[in-house]
Length: 243
Ligand code: SAH
Image 1 (cartoon, rainbow, N blue to C red):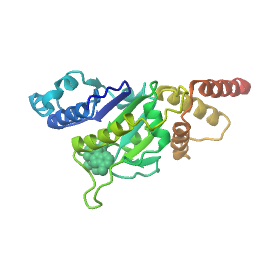
Image 2: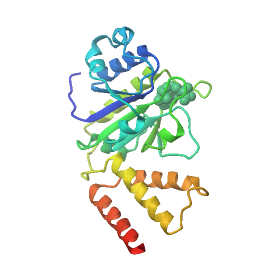
Image 3: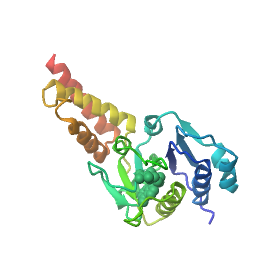
């Protein structure tokens, strides 16, 4: 199949420790028609073994972006999907990878969307904190007895499912709104928490989960630039009003 896509999807591996897995991921990305591989703080260099496993996807390995932190990797993204074999403490909007909602599918297909699909460490997966920085979680249905797949196998399956979405002409690109980046969402969260502290609604010491829950709410809403401007303006007015 020789279809081209201009959709911006980066596959991001967090602290991978096996060069062979990195190479196999590069191959899976290219096989499925994608281009971008990124690593957050890799524990090992991209070695000969990585190139050996990448076979004809050497170009993907050579163009791998290295981020110094998880936050830098997701900063400019406006759709962040985290993969995880396990459900975590505060339930997050989650899909089985073959049952992603039509709404999210159409978000992926929009040209202005910068999607990041995140994969965890071979030994420990992703932390709760990292998972909570993402919009949606994706689970590959697997055995209850042994649910965690090899990193590159997991990426292969996810990339295959995303490929089906990207090339499916029946999925409509309904959303024309320009959804804000993660960085802008982070700024809104801090602004809102500042106001909530000021009006004595929120005490970081006694209500630890409030911030996480509001973060989840903001991410679920997927604000566009105009809505963000209104909210930020509104919060600034409250702060000025208090003075
Ligand atoms: N031992 C780790 C799993 C590491 S597997 C743990 O228990 O969390 C490495 C990565 O592959 C995971 O972090 C996840 O990104 C992906 N992965 C493996 N199995 C998966 C599954 N069933 N569903 C979704 N992602 C999976």
